[in-house]
Image 1: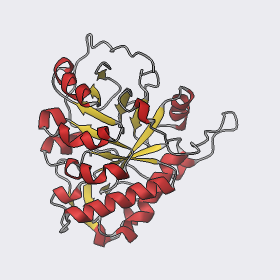
Image 2: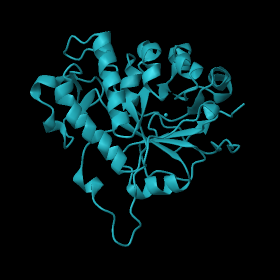
Image 3: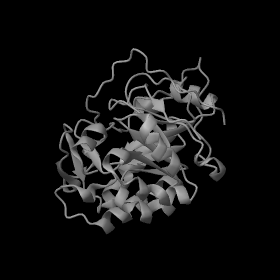
Image 4: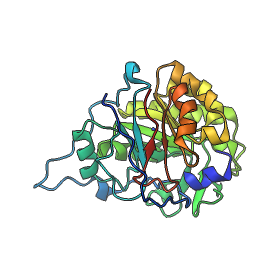
Length: 297
């Protein structure tokens, strides 16, 4: 995720109506990557007066016949708006409550949790589980966030597996891997393209073992190699930055591509992205509940 804007923004059939933008003040503040932590409180049993939330019994399916028909929502801030007219919700697994995931599942929504896999925040409860040897340099523009040495699978796998289990416990059926392109950045480690490729493939395999459908966030240079290993892709701003065509291996394999732009007129960029077969939306960088989706063809 080379551009500085990416560091601030992150770190995927009914007929859908386009929601109005009337009287809304667009916010352009930076979005910092969601903190994914293992917390016993979040996994506590439901109250006796509530119906228990049962995790999905299998990874989220993505029928190839609907690969170009999904509408999606990406929300990481504020209470989750479960009424948004979308099939797929990409959410923060820590701050999203079991009540919210239960309400979405009752509406037959597909739930994807966003997990940071190549970084950690020093204030996270599981930060102490990362040995000093795997802790790298700070991520520019993201306070207290540092890179991880993705070559050290034996050290990282137990922590990341617990982050994935948190998703399962909250009712998610899919996981999107964030910060999965450390090799493109100054991490403090001599990471190579092949180091990252092996790490990402191991994560996809780990997700499947835990009954989660794996998805890849960005990492465009590796899409062609990784498309067979992942079930869907999430992309930020391939129209503004260029490179939308690099996501075509997912489209050609009838796998969803969930795409977002933070600037521009949907009437203009939708022509490109819907033509490619992407599910595209316009969002504020804060990734709150507001969205403006591209109309399906």
